Image (cartoon, rainbow, N blue to C red):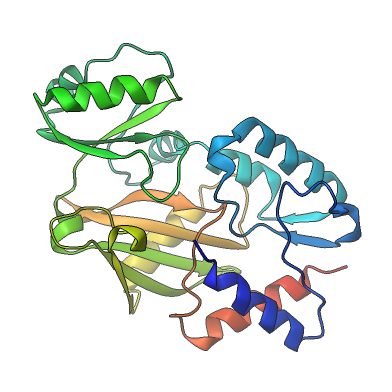
Length: 273
């Protein structure tokens, strides 16, 4: 998938006289020490090589000013961070984490949580890859969970109806302020909002409630981010966090007001030595 944000950011930095160059994170020919600042953008294949990617984070952080910072990238790479957010008071979509190799019963989880319909997805994943939606009692759901547990840790969450009826809202925060929000809607008869599944995106004004929620969530992150995307859904009449993206999120700078891109580029420039 093409990273539209990256092209725009490179252009904005060039307009400021900054020599910005996009490189592949695992390219052995890259001299990371030659870059005073490294911005992580679309490393979307890290999910298949997490240990290697974590090692890369630490190498680059030791040689260049890495943004977002290494502790935040490590924290965000595994979706169990939702449990830590919940423990710190953030309103999070209820989540059960099942560890790799486990023998969990999907129906038992549904019974215990009183969930009639669930989503099962990898704890290390992007773009709804490996996700499945199942009703309680569906044998295919247990099979999906069992297979997923042979590959890594797994999240089980209740299916949130409002994703289909109202969409999922992504709140984008750049350099200390919410700049814009995007409503992501799935294609008819689907629940996945990603464009490769037919989803569509619409720029919306972030309401004061959404801004306040985003600020509260960022306030309990391990480190202040340069960029963040907080994905929320409506559950039982209030907004709940579905994901926090501070590792490699799409920011929809192509849809955002021009001031958002300018703010991002200016923030990068300020971080140069």
